[in-house]
Length: 362
Ligand code: F6P
Image 1 (cartoon, rainbow, N blue to C red):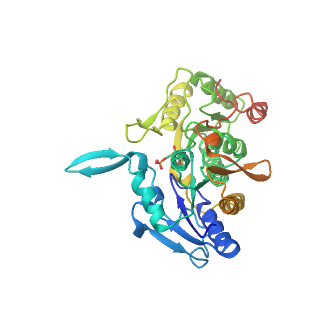
Image 2: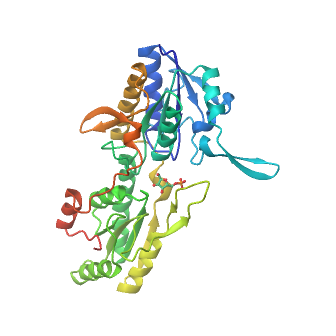
């Protein structure tokens, strides 16, 4: 019988996290009559019991439209490879036994973990050690294969689309090229949807290696036809057909993911060289993660939260809630992770964009 549960947010933030927290607390308090504990800063909060707090309806009042997470989050906290400084030296160790002991001491019957591939992989591994977890998929990148949408993505796409609308007017006035770099890691979903929604002329995504001469040809053709400006959306993970990619930081032993960024500037420079058109770059960066969630993300996040509470009530642990079509359902964490969902270069959406004359540089 479930009496007390915890909820945590891990990895990069995404608009809608607070909506999930609110839904779990409200359904937990009002419907199931559980005690709900907020765990601060991802799994790190389970190592410091003073980082746990009881959450009541009052604590979640007014947070639905708020970006970020009221519980805090960290990107690099993995209890299986916890880093500390001992005698001036960095020590990496598995501290999950401490974490599991703390969960027992606090008396948590279940933990709702909200995160992307990284956080949910840790949740899956904890579940294998017997921790009763339920996962909720979050990421602006929309790259989790077992859910049609993750919350946060719709807001990020709206932000990027709005930026494209604004850049259009200045690009047209100055007869310039505008390159807009968007996030998404190794998936081109944000670039593709914002590019279509914002009327881009060129969209460069990781799934379709691009040729710079094809991009330049498109921009010159447009200029010849009287459009002396062009809007190029480039996903941070886009690569050239010869495999060129721009990284901010290479993977390290401690943090396996590469940090992407800088391809926008690279592409703008090449357009300048290859077409003679004055070209500027805008990197949208973390603007895409911030701010108030769209209605779509609020509703999706809320439905995910209620469904996660339902899985806890039924004691269906080791599962992740997901959206299939218009229905919320769930899948085992084992099946949901490690196989990123990427744009199909031959899929309907890319084809439709190409039929509109959008260039992918292939
Ligand atoms: O996964 C979400 C995301 O925003 C990616 O799109 C981006 O590559 C990465 O996180 C940035 O991470 P950080 O906030 O650590 O720079």
